[in-house]
Image 1: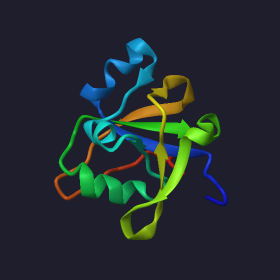
Image 2: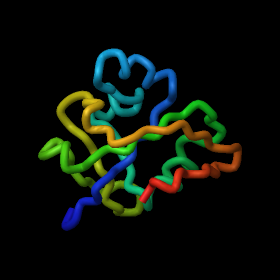
Image 3: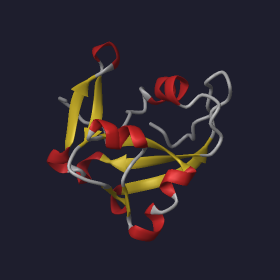
Image 4: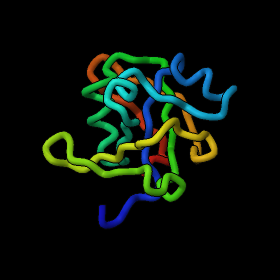
Amino acid sequence: MPHSPDLIYKIATRASYAAAREVGHYAGMPIDAADGYMHFSTAAQLPETLRLHFRGEADLVLLAVRTADLGEQLVWEPSRGGQLFPHLYGGPLSLTNVAWETQISVDANGNCALPEAVR
């Protein structure tokens, strides 16, 4: 990716993220384990990711992750329509890399009110 954004975003269910606070790292969602890497979205990709994959989910946590902290483990790979998506390889996400987190929910139509901090 020519210019990596300062922040990328991870969507987690509250249940999957609960243990992370105790151990200091997040292993990801079941799809991350199945694919062998952790899925992230940019701010621009986030609304579509929420609409496609999290419709009707009320107990979600949105993590803003600093790309500079991820180093070479962060790989940009083509996905939906050839867009480059950020993927984290090589293990769990350290919570020291999380700039902020907030609770979000997605309605039955796939809409979500994102915080103003998403940029």
